[in-house]
Image 1 (cartoon, rainbow, N blue to C red):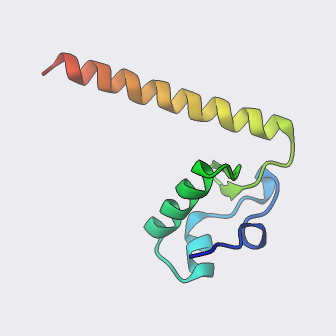
Image 2: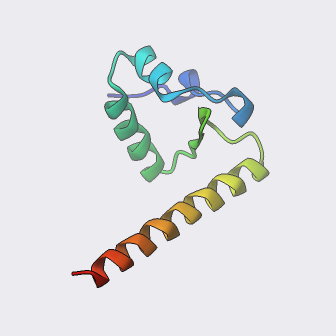
Length: 88
């Protein structure tokens, strides 16, 4: 499926759109929408997310903030994995 990202995702965190709204616009499930977003990110499309929803960064500050959040989440997940592996 070819997603018209520029037509469905707004610019700026203040304009973020919830996952369920995006999925509904395309007539797909939320899980499918997550898959397409993940693929787009892996292909280099800079799609940010927050508790409010998904958006394109409107500034370098929004880009940096999103990257910091992703790094923090990754570090937390790896710390959990490290702890769980010690329990094996």
